Amino acid sequence: MFKKLQQKWGVNGLNMALIITTFALGGSACARIAGQLLKLISLEKNTIWWVIYILLVTILWPICVIIISFPLGQFKFFKNYLFRIWSKISGKTVENDQKKNNFAKKKTKLAIFASGKGSNADNIISYFKLNQIADVAIVVSDNAAAGVLGIAAKNNIPIMVLSKEDRLNYASCIENLHKNEVDFIVLAGYLKKIPASLIRQYPNKIVNIHPALLPKYGGKGMYGAKVHQAVIENNETVSGITIHYVDEIYDHGKIIFQEKCEIENGETAESLANKIHFLEHKHFPQVIAEVIQK
Ligand code: GRF
Image 1 (cartoon, rainbow, N blue to C red):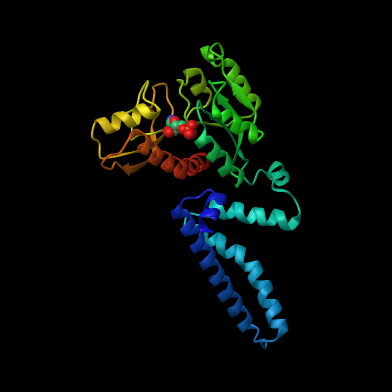
Image 2 (image 1 turned 60 degrees about the vertical axis):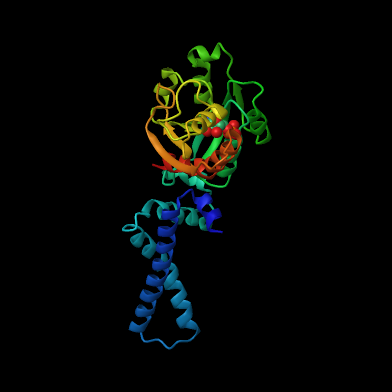
């Protein structure tokens, strides 16, 4: 259940623990304050006492959680959480209220660039369907036969296949990204180099996942099984995943996240690829959510 909530709210394990602590402390604080207030008017514990008590708790609870969320660093989460509750009670949709007062954050529109099967893209699409953080607005590929295009079609997501000409300056791609109001780009197995023209349009808003622990085993031509093969041939004892910002050099931008896995005796490129995919599916959507919420 916690895992589902974590996914829905787009928070990591530590933040989840702090959010639950805020709920618990807020709940007990407002119950205590309401009890103390009722003692002041020395009312008998009858039905009226309970009605007033519940009313007081309802009024005090949001105030208590907001106050407690400050020192626990969860103010932003609770501000949006209470806003969503208020939207439900008042019958206004979050979207309407967003337009009116810009209080809650607008969903980020993602573009996923991929060249192959698209298991990461599939996983990212499913993850963001469950929460209010982002939507996948378009899937871009350089390969008309890429499996990722079928995944996009299944999810009714617009696609764009970049021809060789399109990739000369990415002008039509940039135009299409703007048309789809894309704010953030995720490279999930995209094999072509991202040009400066596109990076300039999305500074610090393009992330890539690499199936090894950069800065080792990166660079031009280092993708898929070639990476795992090189890692095994060099008798490494660990490999892993790297999520990083994209700059003009292959696999070079600032590292955001890494996670390791062990290489066992008799490990093959295929078995290592499975371990890496497991880590990618576990962490990539969550890291994207954290980066876009910064
Ligand atoms: C992943 O291993 C990723 O690290 C690399 O390309 C692979 C894409 O796999 N950049 P999939 O197409 O998402 O299954």
